[in-house]
Amino acid sequence: MPRPEVSKREVSKRNARDVSNPQPLGVPLLVALVATGVEALGLASSAIGLSVYKLAGHRPFDSGDLWAVVGMAAIGAIGLGLVVRGLARARRWSRSPTVLTQLIVLPIGVTTIAHGGELVGVPMAVCGLAGLVAIFAPSTTHRLNESTD
Image (tube, rainbow, N blue to C red; front, top):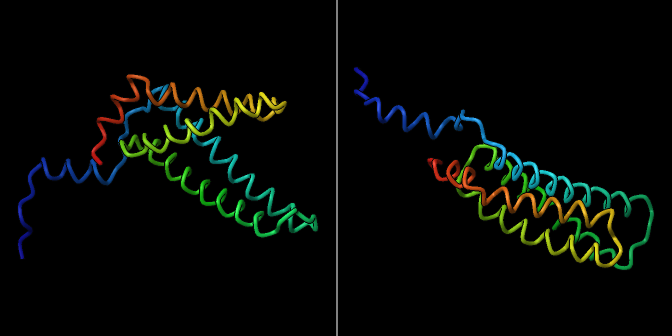
């Protein structure tokens, strides 16, 4: 049975969907990707650290609360990992969760600094601010708007 004719335009649309854009990401999009990736790693390390804390025999105030926080941190880390994957592929949908994450991280970092936690607060605030500025950079907007999703 002969194969049906497929136009070059349909082939290029399929290729655009199947293969991520091979163009370089650009510095601002890369900064947003790294900032979001660092935040995902922070959530993952929190989930692992709290689990180890409990399993090593330490007694938290409320064990149920601890496991709830571990679960939320793990789910957040997985979700942000998917967002990082979307940013790496320059997908338009990844912009909103990135902005939301930066808007959450930035005030938490500032509040942590104000309460004496400079070692944690400064990297959080810098990461949040850098990610927010980078995701709104004109080159990032242009690159994400090129997306075929």
